[in-house]
Image (cartoon, rainbow, N blue to C red; front, side, top):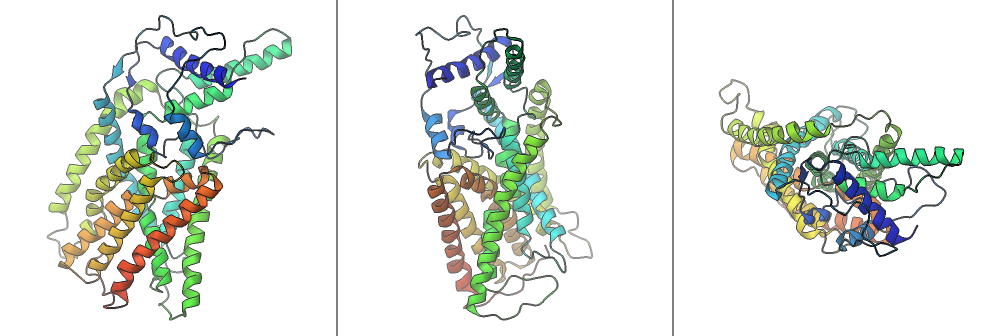
Length: 459
């Protein structure tokens, strides 16, 4: 099948979906959403059917194609079938699309932050084999990200018509027709799969799950903080005191944190994709009308309501006047106040910057470096100490909430897995080295001159 006929087939699929459901609402998604690497249609597993020959496409190649203007071509010069007299589809405004997307990002930033803090709490214990607890959150977020990227069932109905699964059924009919000898029209399954992936990434709920939940569940800044503390021999363990060691062992320690985190998270990305492939026949599908009529509208209410509620809890915590030490704000409330700011900043930075250099995701790189630097400064101020208990809790909220949601590992490892090998090594190595150098300057200058004091707040 030629490239022109592939484009025609994809356009026929989209046109057929519109013709079948002329009254279904459709979100008018801004084209700039294509710059989000969370949404680029490059799944972790390129050959789920394990065909002997398949075409490998890198993240750069996928972006190149996304940025090309869509062209309607045909081998015989005629207009593609289904384009004639196609009823106009009612479209929701861009403002509504953006509102739903932002609301999902805010809501899932809360859930991702709470999941990360909760997982840290249960995985750091006396005798734990892994003493940098951020590893498990980064692994879990990368695994879920891989599942969502590869899944074809959760958003099966797309905008009301399961076009991809209709093409699968036609492929099965084709196979049966070939066995019986009857003629069956050809089906371009690759084009159908690509069309489904392109449609899925325009759904606000999908953006909220990938960019929002997975991005906030994982934290690049906390990963680099653990790497620095390992280098500085200050990575505390719940069951053993810190023992003095020489510089060579400190280098081994920082390499252990870095290599373990990167390897485990990339493995989690592929494991999640493999789970999606293996469980495809058992994965339920989200009903179209329920998602559009109920979930999207509830997300607006709960997202903004929870954010306002978190602000009021920060001002009037339930344990403010209790006899015991006040811990609510330091453990979770301030983190929830700041988490939407970090998530939205990462979202807009990716929109504006990730398309600038296709072989080097500039937006993800800058937010990871900037968030790591902010975390380092907050860590320094927290160990001065500055501002008493309230100041310590605010700084902890900035680290867990703003910096944790501004920086991401799930998107980062997805980019590492989909870039060309040379570009991937350059991008990943540069990200780790630059971020670690920032913390060496920011936190190291503080630790090796004045020293870190004990923090005043409980978290």
